[in-house]
Amino acid sequence: MNIVHREDQQQREHVLLSPDAAFSDETEGRAQSAQPDFLRTEYQRDRDKILHSKSFRRLSHKTQVFLAAEGDHFRTRLTHTLEVAQIARTIARALGLNEDLTEAISLGHDLGHTPFGHTGEAALAACLARHRGIDPASAQAAAQYRHNEQSLRVVERIENGGRGLNLTAEVRDGILHHTGPVRADTFEGRIVATADRIAYVNHDIDDAIRAGLLTEAALPESTRRVLGPDHSSRIELLVRNMVETSAAADDIMLSAPVWDAMNELRSFLFANVYTAPQVLVEVQKAKCLVAQLFDYYVANIGEVPEEYRAISGGDDLQAVTDYIAGMTDRFATAAFNRLFVPRDFMR
Image (cartoon, rainbow, N blue to C red):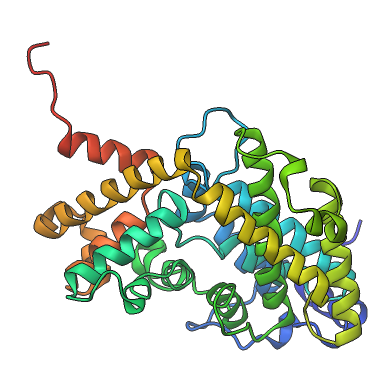
């Protein structure tokens, strides 16, 4: 049995992958130089660094959509991340692109997500705006906290005791640009951006059906005609369409009819799931919880762990933001109960 060294794998990439792929031996490198690994390519090392990080482990206890879901089969931020990685790797392999880079970006793209999903993200943005004297209702307020920017901060500054993970430039670029108006520099990063949307639109439908908020028959007929009648059909069509359209266009994209149908489904979810009364009740609770924790820790900065205060360089708002953003749902809830819920001292 022969050993396949890093150099062998790098050579294999040049033989097997498309000329459009990001080759691991042509990476722009890391912020701090590091000795090459005996067995793994640079992107494989990045994948493993992310997989073994504390922030990645915490994703298993962070909400995807349903804040108070009962049952073991609702998605968490971790299972969402794994679904994104699976979809992205399938597309990358079919296009002859670098699966290792795609997987590393996928696994790291949501490390900066708050507890309670996008609800926590909006709550943190509002808290920062309020403390910085910005109108919380303004467009500028929403820009105070973005989970993709926090994901980059996690891998560059927060993880590893403030030293970061020292990832390659291509992985950091893909993490930062998996959402927002600026596209990733690599095709692999662009795959993750679309795979993220493919994953959450479809698994949020699946979870909403499980929660009793939807049925397959309730989905718009126009999207059913284009994308298919059920979960597996939609995923299969979206992946195949993305591969075929990207190959023909020499870029990463879905065809216009399929892209429009997926966005129609996304709008349908906002109207019928994300803003459903039973969801909004829990959303409001989560927003209040995050706001009260934020205000408490700003007023009592000494109770924020020293590692976050050291990383922030004396910026109290940043220290509190980093601390709360890293919390899991259950840790944030426990902190709230400890700080604000009266105890029965007569026991």
